[in-house]
View: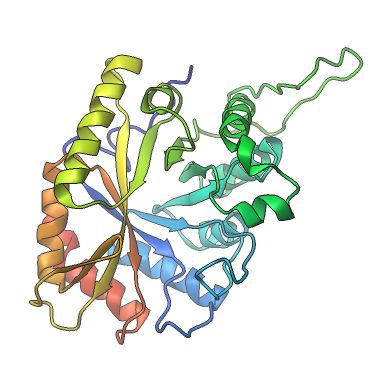
Length: 311
């Protein structure tokens, strides 16, 4: 059992909603990803007042994957962003826990914890693309069990001091993970990973899920609250939503639904976020979809017209 949680005074606070941005941000559907531009956009997000920068973990592309552009390795680019920023939270959304060795993840997470002076948040997913499991010589049919096993080993390695859990005891060998983390690195479950909400509430600092229509999302939040009350009574566990937004030039443009999000002007976007906050959402991982607005201008528009209303 884990009691990992973020302080209510930091990224996740009960009764409040903070807004983070997910990289990469592209200008058009045909744009490739300039990694250094993404670092610059992350520093701009900090200057504009966003609470977090999130980076996805997409190891491989192929005809079976809908996105044709290449993604940066999340740990590498977050290291570059950590060196250029001072207070914005940095997170993975989500590291594919089933396809990476938990000790490698722990070493990278602890390194980012040191580089960022305690700003790193470790989002963890189980992976849902069968082709990637084949490439990594893993069995997608076992991903639920693999997720739980890797989570336990990773959580132990992130303790202070770290504990190294071996599949089989080896009396001839002793292992240490140095240095230890600076802080208690939050582990978020991104998606369910094939686990029950009670398991997530018991083991994770919070749960991140995709956008759903408002009534469906309210129901999911209530399910989460009941799971937290059963599995971790009295503990704070955050609720995060990953939201896709196509921001329109006209800030007064009305909102309309798209897959996993909205097409909207900035003013109605604020109303959407306020309603999400009232429904119990603590944080939004914002994906700004390609549009005619340059990425830096999109960030500035959200910062100018949306962020002040969330304070």
